Image (cartoon, rainbow, N blue to C red; front, side, top):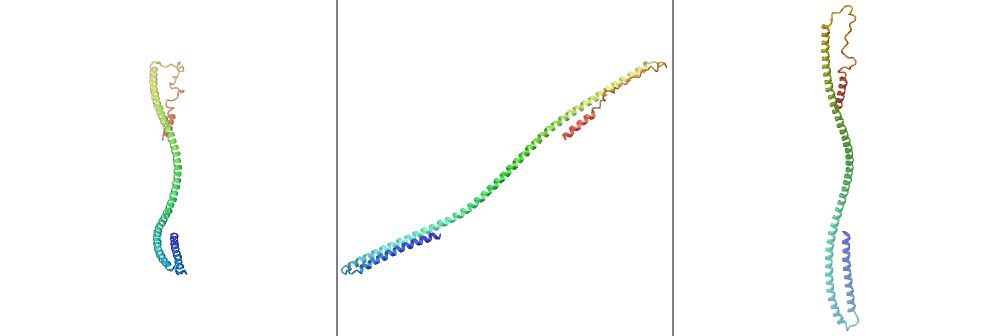
Length: 234
């Protein structure tokens, strides 16, 4: 703001100096004309001098008016220049504030990029964990299905074993009844033994077949299978 004021003041000084110089030159010319040795043309020179003086005064007045107008215009321009400089200063401060805001925004953008990278890594880890959980869930589902099938098979085998046990018990009861009937019939139909035939009596063979497995021999293995299936289910 100081530089425009100095330039306007310098311009005014230059204009005033030129006007004063021109006025001095005009006065010198008038003095030279008035002091010339030609007495005959003195009256004419005086008239010319008076006219020149009046013209110079009028011209000087016009130049003063011009200088005043120029000075007023320079003052107006100086006011505009000061306003422009004030606006430029305000714009400069706003520019500084905007640059700071841009720096803050750039920092925020960098932080958001870092957060995005971290969240992307976490999301990738969560997806891997989700895939692992899905795999484990699938395996657990298949294992559960297998355990249910084993349970059903064990239950079926247990029912079959119960049916077989009942069939064996029924067969045993039937054979026991037949044995009792046979023993009753033999005791009624046989004569009293004589001493000679006592040693010829043949013992009755046992009905039980020791080579056949007992009916409940598969129960422990079946119970072990059922317990294993239940353990896998739980």
